[in-house]
Length: 583
Ligand code: DON
Image 1: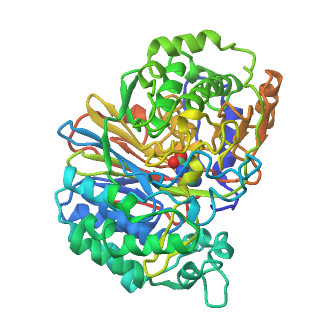
Image 2: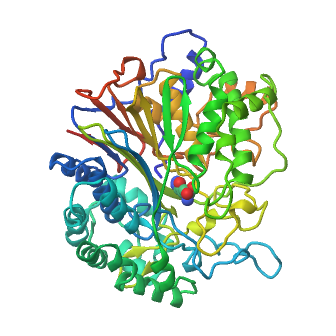
Image 3: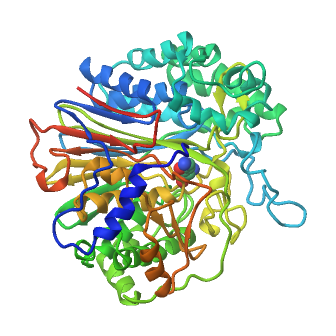
């Protein structure tokens, strides 16, 4: 992710200093204005993919059609996270009131086993769950995108794959934003012969601005799916080649795994925050459950009066996060394998019980400590609203940046390293420092617990806010904070996604800060309350939240109601390849 210093981060300091002033929302002058459009809005992490989505909307497609076309386009133009070899979640709210949630996340191969990443000493073997073929789960994206199109879309498969096919076949010229995403992964990609041919210059150096990325093998796969649908992928040549690559590279993927793959249709998790209704990701994501638990807990605190960036407001928020992540890490897992206590965790009574245990002036204590790995992750989120008021939020990933960093020869498909989201061993932290339990142990056909949180907020039965971000376990807290920035702190949607976040995930027991998220004196006050507070200097930009606010740039001015509402789109200003584009 980009590392350049951010004017936005400075505004976080300013906001913290201004928070003693009552009532009027602070001025976050360093953020550009959100993008305004009258009819439809597409916000993605890669501008060409955003353009593809808008073209589908202009041609009469609905938001789900646009989301499907964007999903395929990102697999071509944003290979760090866009994918055919990974998976994701889609939250849908149709204008007629229908809601849906598609789980097209990876499943563990049939030959996976509980202790597959442990060495003879019973400890996790470094890199086994993150690098190379053994890290890969069975990909779900093609199945998911096609299920979405069939369930909620209006356009034909060929129409929606065509833009991605053209971008793969004819190529596209890399912009400075695109270049950034290739820089760090290049050395690893160069080690895999098939990846090297596509993503690295012939001399072994990283692709640069102005280079043209042409992907004929990926175009071949897209052509096959365009003609033959998901069966062409899961039972045809692409699956056979991925399985061959896996066998050669020490992986365990089989044709049986591909044949068994199914997208799951689930009900979104729902909760209320004041007059707003939140729809978000159910298990196998922890996202919606944890977001609802945190917001239910926070709803009773006077956050607005405490002020954005205040030590008191951060303290309450962090304590709510501490409890919610404890429950996440211990209790949640794939619903086909474990009983998830979602109702209990998202109930008002439970939130009340948590508040009773939060001391307003002292930090709580999480048992034990665990280090956070510094490895660079990458996921991507996109948000779409169409002229009819259909809303779609999609988060999709290979897990780490470029996933397992292996390509199946002849396919141009990068494989995910999603197996690392499982519990390798209870108590041992994963890529995101998450210390997880038995509920999320590896088992054949099981889906690893996720934090991805594609979220849609309704007011008076109409979409108000569409929101999500990458960031591993920080996805959840970033979505909560962007929501609070709009709903409690009066920010416009661009300011809300730009504001540098803070994060607590139970273990390790510390408040992590994006650099300059809180002023030094606010940090000091939190330390005096007993918190450990640390800026993550080696991870300067955590996410790339992509959001749409319906009706007005900020909440106070938003009008509820289905028609003639302008749309305001925003992606984190530091996401240089991304774009909010409307029409
Ligand atoms: O599903 C999850 O929670 C992770 N695999 C998401 C990874 C991610 O967000 C990486 N992005 N920065």
